[in-house]
Image (cartoon, rainbow over all chains, first blue to last red; front, side):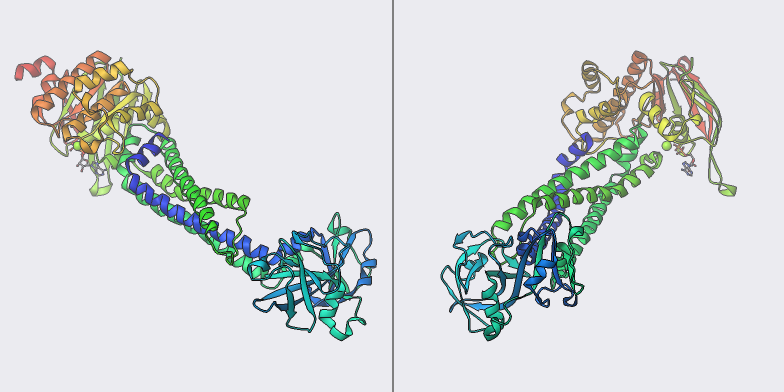
Amino acid sequence: MFLAWNEIKKNKLRFALIVGVLMLVSYLVFFLSGLATGLASLNREAVDKWDATAIVLTEESDKSLPQSSLTTEEADNIKDNDTATLGQLNSIARNGDAKQNIALFGIDSEEFIMPKVTEGEKFAGDNEVIASDTLKEDGFKLGDELELSSTDEKLTIVGFTDSARFNAAPVLYGDVTTFQKVKFGEGAAENETQINGIVVRGDDFSSISTSNEDLEVIEVEEFIENLPGYTEQALTLNFMIYFLFGISSVIVAIFLYVLTVQKISMFGVMKAQGISNGYLSRSVIAQTFLLAFIGVVVGFALTLISGEFLPSAVPVAFDIPTMIIYGVILIVVAILGAVFSVLTIVKIDPLKAIGG
Amino acid sequence: MAILELNNVKKSFGSGHMKVDALKETNFSAEPGELIAVIGPSGSGKSTFLTVAGGLQTPTSGAILVNNKDLADLNEKQRSKIRLKEIGFILQASNLVPFLNVDNQMKLLDNVKKDNMSKEELNALYDNLGIKELRKKYPADLSGGERQRVAIAKALYSKPSILLADEPTASLDSEKAYEVMELLKKETTQNKTTTIVVTHDTRLIEYCDKVYEMTDGVLKLKETSKKSQAIL
Ligand SMILES: Nc1ncnc2c1ncn2[C@@H]1O[C@H](COP(=O)(O)OP(=O)(O)O)[C@@H](O)[C@H]1O
Ligand SMILES: [Mg+2]
């Protein structure tokens, strides 16, 4: 640390540049991870809120909730576990001024997927819905009458709930009959048992089964991964993050290598004096750690600060534990970049360096 | 008892008709407290002799004993330890770390080795070298002569039993050069250090106990102290 720190103190500008680059890379990594988390919750937060183990859909729906069609009686074929019936459709809601893509969930208010109301009241009768509170930012409010694109039925917002987005659309929770009126119109009465899926909450996935061969029990995580676009988005962003890890390692390696090459004769002199490779290598590693640590911490702070100033339309959500893990990876990766310099130092022949 | 011994040491570079015998078969020994000069023309093998003796390069054949330890039996890591503990180098080119001030040049050694000079000893050394005012200065802010004196302080700070100096006075004017030689003489007798100074400045040999001359890789004892003074 003695050498490392004294060198940094003496060459502030040079090392500030390295810290600056590391800071920008970590800023980008943290931001992308925030974006990944934000986009993921945009897709899955309503599902996460169920706190469910599995969902039962028809085999032929290929894990797609809207494509699945079954009846409420199927719940009786699922033994030993808590179940909740779920009807779902996508539509566009207008209140006169604003319009927004929504997902309508038809549920039974007695079952566990009934959300907690954060404002207003629970739905009591037909055509009453609890809405995702993100709709407030889109210009919807309590008491709004909603026209839906697919039907003449009008829905009324009687309450709001939080964390209620499904596959990027805010959710409206209503009674199953409300859902069926919207979906089937005149034919609602004949289809009163028609729903899309059954959500199951149990102790473990393997205990959940159904006696109906045409149905498939899908683990919740797998169900989420099969939401349209979800896996593709996550992969894209994670790939960018992994590339950035590699890039920052290379950047640090190049920077440190250039610095090390400039100092070859100095290292040679110290080696001639009998200062060990170990001491010099530890010094370079310690220096890299210091630079990377400062860069990552500043990048972290900068990310959180700029997160405060972003419009709410940008789907960033900072998951601190993930960011800490990424920060640690960045530091480790930077230290890997220093390995090149260490190898160079070990290879320096003190004799050549002092130019006897 | 000899602190440094070279037995039948040879060093050659290259092979075939490109072969250079930089150091022909050499026998040499030095006692604690001796100040020895090696003079000779450029390219005669003086630096080769010094670096081989100091364990910075391995001889082609022969044995080098430092404190009765054969350097040939040691690996690079162990030789590095010997250099740290027993040997001090003063080189022609500045051998200071650019981003450390004078005090920290010494402190670096405290980081890697025990039993260096005490504060009082260091202060006395600074006084002797006339660099007390330079303690907080960085190498870039020193003149060539000042740098060389700091390099000497650094070499002496670790209290080596052998001090190897390759043209330490090359960048100094003759007045400063005499001062430096006087100082090396003083430290050598005070601490029972064995000091070998390579130089081509024959005026400096009056300070030395023995003078060797190097010609074409052959090392020959030229004068002992009294004779050399008689010549001058
Ligand atoms: N690493 C080396 N490779 C090849 N030849 C060398 C090397 N080092 C020294 N020599 C040769 O050995 C001879 C002695 O060199 P050196 O010991 O540096 O002389 P001096 O210090 O007396 O000027 C010279 O001819 C030089 O070219
Ligand atoms: Mg030379």
